[in-house]
Amino acid sequence: GNSVTQMEGPVTLSEEAFLTINCTYTATGYPSLFWYVQYPGEGLQLLLKATKADDKGSNKGFEATYRKETTSFHLEKGSVQVSDSAVYFCALKGGGGADGLTFGKGTHLIIQP
Amino acid sequence: DTAVSQTPKYLVTQMGNDKSIKCEQNLGHDTMYWYKQDSKKFLKIMFSYNNKELIINETVPNRFSPKSPDKAHLNLHINSLELGDSAVYFCASEAVGTGELFFGEGSRLTVL
Image (tube, chains in turn orange, cyan):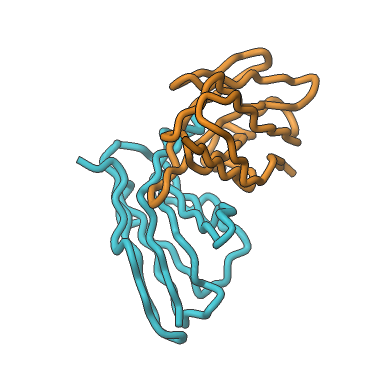
């Protein structure tokens, strides 16, 4: 079956540091890959996505590249801010129907001023 | 106008009671989901509906019963609540097949 593995954290960084959150996946076929973000007390929001190999998703300074050869979709940001503190979820969608997303366990990111 | 809204946001109840959580979306999506998030933030899909038809029913106790009166609504009824049901329950909708889910704010259920 499908699965997503990501570093669980918490990850604590200083403001303006470089961020990497690793994500690897197992899936049959060619899944679409996503990063979702959950701010405290809120539901998840889509941050970025990539639908095929070598695609790069980007939004709000965050980037992730779909690497089929390493089955990875690592999230990066060059300079984090306190407002980026949240839980980040890597996810995949295996098929085109109403089968939902398979989520990783989430990575809690804490940015200190 | 909230795209996906859930009520109630907080629910505290005793073991053995029956409770419901309501969800409505105004995005015109055909697909809706219920997810359960535990205390460690792990998200697990419970049910998915497409145009009022049940598509996914994961290994969830049959005390949990979803109901979709129309494609804009997906409610969750829980019978005989147990301590282990304490969690945050999220409703989400999706334009079918896109993987772009829109989540509600969650309903925090505490069973005492």
